Length: 383
Image 1: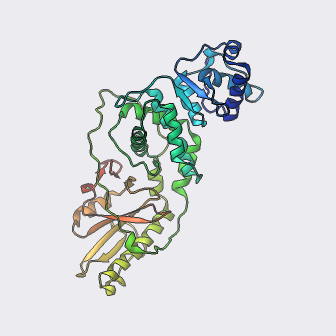
Image 2: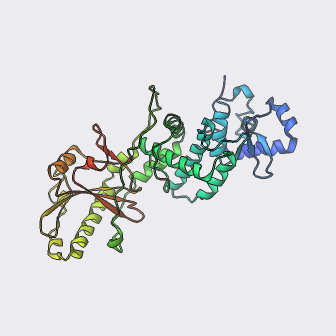
Image 3: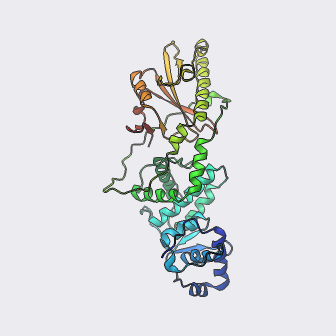
């Protein structure tokens, strides 16, 4: 029976197998363990730069795990290159493909698995607050993706961000979602890999549920930002239904229920609004701004009662995220109805990057006029 390698193999065990490969020589190593020479993928020994047969290295790595394990035979490895290559990449090893991609050519499944594994590795480090170098990661990827350019790798990272956002995961900073991609293949690979990545799940959950507190802005003049435009680009047409692995949770929805973050965001918006009125020369109105969700309770359809220069009312609903400006957010049916009923006075203030450097943009009038609004969940997204 074939054995799954998933999370069993460690980087130390792979390195030990590589040391044996270098010590004994390729022919003797393959003959001893019953593996045939690789044709496509070779893992690079970081100590010597020698190219070793990737499948054989992973099989022999089991020999260097705890005593209950032993080296696997070729027929015991599950998934072949499709499993071995992303595994080695996720452990930090460079895997070289002997072929070469043509510019503009669709990515192969092996290439997609490599870049997704690397993306998820960086995202986990980011969410846990650990340092990493995107440039170094990209250089290492390019050694494995023969014929791919810096631009194609960056573009694919943005495609992965779009899939992550769709599946409810916070994307990697710096790679804003782009929706035109090999949708079925990329979604399938991302879904499979995140389900095998328990550390990412824990890191994402911690990131969205972490308590927050108000950090006053040093300069409110730098807070206001331009609202992103919804990306409604044509997507790859699905010609048939493809079942996707179940996703554990929508982390953006979890963040929306973070009361600490929501309260801190409302306090920040309250301070910004009073500053705005003072800057407009109507400081007397700033004193009348009311945090109605606190003084009167939820259910009004907005959080803050403010004013325009002429004294007319401005109704403000505040939505806060620790992630970037294109992060999806959730509204209630009551908020949607209220925004429609008072389009001239309603403003949705979207705070983003709240834990690092809070910024905000405003969406006036009906919410669905600015973003795609799911009719069932009231999840608002910019694509």
